[in-house]
Length: 166
Image (cartoon, rainbow, N blue to C red; front, top):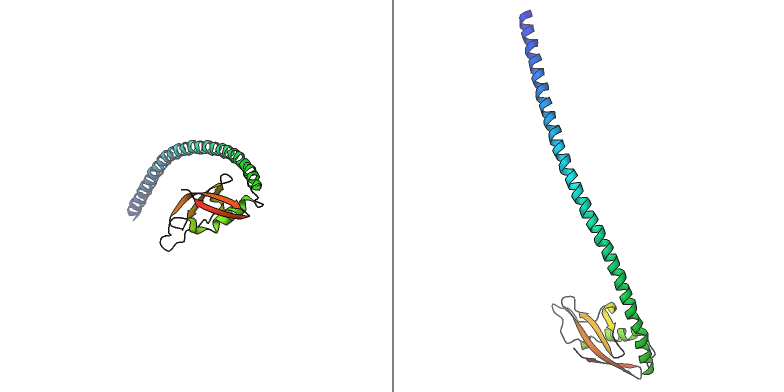
């Protein structure tokens, strides 16, 4: 019996050694693959940092462009005073917003019919530009199609009359 026990223990010992050997090899492979993965992640991190730097530069450029456009817009807004002065000479007592509001109530000036059940109109006062004391450029839409229209207007006795130019 002692001999069989020794053989049994020797076999068990060999099995344990084999299990530890294979686990050790698995662990070595895992360490090697984690090194490769670490290198991949390091390269990806560098790429993302470069991309982030490019995006930060693009953001800065866009901020500068926005500031320049704001300056341009402020210069344009100076025309509003000149337009109002010319209109007051003609007897107009309102604001440019009054001209915009009047145009928004005149959808019949739009030379196109709405499609798919839409109704053409001047829905956005932000897209109606009073260009001079006689011209307006306006955006119109029906929710499906859109366009721009150039209009001439005249003010007599507080009444605004409109004429489509283009």
